[in-house]
Image 1: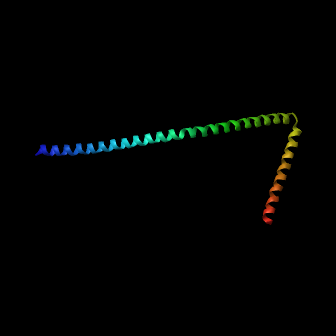
Image 2: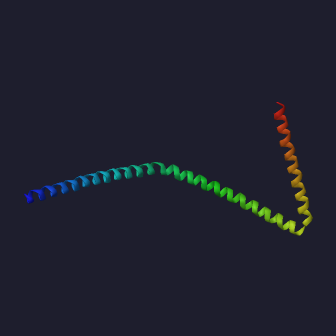
Image 3: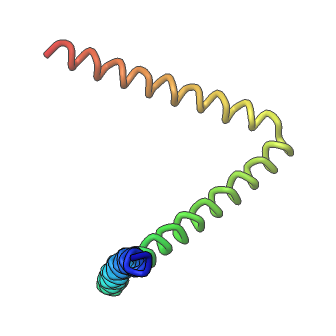
Amino acid sequence: MVFEVCALVATIIFGVIGVELMLWIRSARKLTDEAKQTVQDINAHLPYLLSDVQAVTSIVRQTSEQVGGTVNEVAVSLEEMRKNPLRFIAVFIEGIKQLMALWQDIRGRKKEASDR
């Protein structure tokens, strides 16, 4: 009788282990299939991603060249202002005049829009 109970318990334990093993293998197979599909998707989209990266790289290169030129111009202007401080005041007043003209232009547009 004890032997039959032990055999029954062992059968149940091995059955549960077998079911768990089947579920684990099935989930590993699904995971492998999903990984394979993901790699295929990446391979399909990779050329487009690389072309986008290349376009962004060229834009960044152009922007950095423009910024480099602007920084050089500012450095030259600062050197000129250091040599001639009155030039700084003249440039500052000219900037204020341009800002005032821009402000007047914006206010004029608002008045035109409100009159309509």
